[in-house]
Image (cartoon, rainbow, N blue to C red):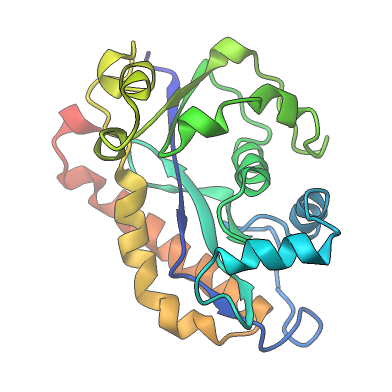
Length: 238
């Protein structure tokens, strides 16, 4: 269990962005060099799942609130499920809510070129996201695709969110009944959002490049502060 890796996944719909500029007028310097996923490969992956039917797109947008004039409806993110350190290339924009194709890419992008004995994923909709997970992985960009067997990834639901699920989920996806996870609660990503939500108003009106670099900078500072404060924790929790 010493070599297990814990990931916490979630979406933040406060970090929206208005369509006030474009990537030509506001380019990103160092695209994909830090915490945001590389834009080109990420966008190409998302385009495979965008509906070409304008009627369907309009119906979908009707189910979302306050999306008029938005380029980005929120942000998806992945951090360490134990220490709340944001993963490199583990953050990406959400175009139309929290869709599997966004989270799939961010998940694989964040573990590219890495190998673990086992990965424990904490996600509030793991019970749904895990369905057909391995089938969807066949469509991932080969440049970030990682070879894992089904037994090497465990899907869990964070403890606070679990009570809202059906009874079958409360046993199958519970940290309390999983082997090798200790007292992990899986909710650390919510603490990470608490810091990032403070810049939601500031970044909402930025161009795409300026916003991306600002988020990279803020996430990097959040990680630095987290690592600096690890020494103040009781070693039993590290």
